[in-house]
Length: 93
Image (cartoon, rainbow, N blue to C red):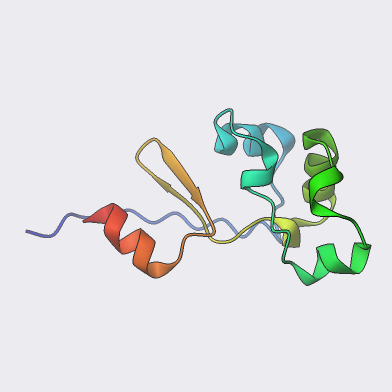
């Protein structure tokens, strides 16, 4: 039996997340869980992955949404950052 799935789409390039929305998505996890260190935008900045604080990572995300690991998927009470289709299929079945 297949379960119904409700999909809510949020284009955070047109409507960027606020600090509060990001904190709610992180659910107490470090900002690095949401941060895309492999993004070309991050590489252009010439910064190193291990030296930035959570506050610095948050400021970077707030100013450049391309630094968010995509997709951001909320299923039930859990949020997943950068999950591929295989991982998502396992989660919903």
